[in-house]
Image 1 (cartoon, helix red, strand yellow):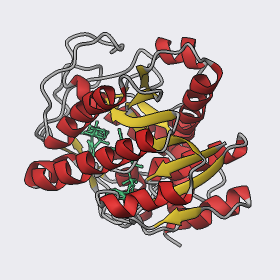
Image 2 (spheres, helix red, strand yellow):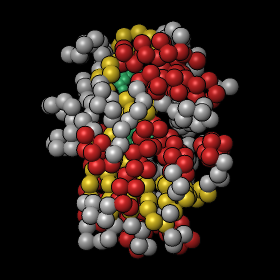
Image 3 (spheres, rainbow, N blue to C red):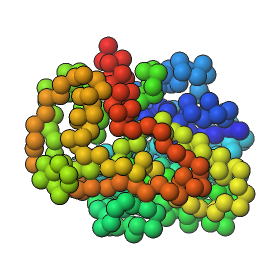
Image 4 (cartoon, rainbow, N blue to C red):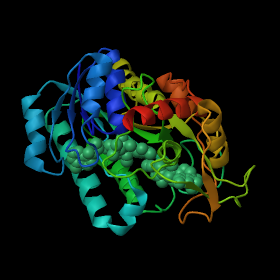
Length: 337
Ligand code: NAD
Ligand code: WQD
């Protein structure tokens, strides 16, 4: 079965391609390299022995996007990862984010309907929940006012997909990721962004390897067990597995809802200081960090209740924060060589 992965040379897309290939799917990718250097294509080949065709296409371009579907009339499913994802940048450049994330989605959905694609899986985010009143967060937790244009694109994208695909034969799943981190355990692939990373785990590994002199812990005065903020870090290969299982669920269950959404986290909150400790313990490296004021826009705590994904998708994340740090560090050492 042929699956189109948009954003397939990006961080989560490339890891998902590996998992899909290992589960017998045929995969093609569409990625303009807006935020990737393309090296993941070699990583995928090293790990799976397969060369993946990537269409170097800006998915906001209607004509170029349709070419992919014209040339591949047998696409059965699309997993749509392609988007810009930097929260801070989205505040400075909201038009860029709305244009890129919404127009690419519209073009993809248009072709999905036109070319009779059966399955659609979308990368959403826990950011749709804002700062929740109650933890853990399940899928009944109310969606809150978006805290950034990026967050708004995810909320609106979920609604657009629902509206466009209702009364069609396409079945859709929205996956709300918590904090993806880590790398493929082979050390052959991981996050290789074109722009400097802003997330905690790559900042930790870049500091330890010496690319950064030191790093900051943003806030030690939250009402949490050690004062630093709590997140639900999910290993990228567990996340990849959830995408394969989502497709499989739609394929195996003709009676599955036409539109559904799932939280993907491991259900355990980890503080920033605990994450740093985990890194130091599994790698033996000492991290140079200092305490800084809270980062504007950050929430104190969020973690997932993933019972729904566990029950329906039969998805059980296997890796913890130590596994995340181990694999991220192995990848950092390879990447920096
Ligand atoms: P990423 O930047 O590594 O990958 C996205 C890929 O999409 C990049 O390779 C980029 O070049 C490509 N792309 C972007 N716009 C494009 C366009 N118009 N045409 C063609 N290609 C385009 O990001 P990621 O971390 O792999 O994230 C994948 C998806 O998951 C995104 O939709 C993101 O918003 C979502 N998400 C990510 C996180 C996270 O923390 N990484 C958390 C929740 C949700
Ligand atoms: C995690 C924790 C920081 C860097 C973002 C998006 C969210 C989703 C996932 C896409 C926070 C702290 C970080 C540093 C630190 N993405 N931190 N020092 O902000 O939870 O979520 O990525 O959908 O929408 O907002 O992730 O990795 O940036 O931060 O102390 O140098 O680490 O303050 O508490 P975040 P993050």
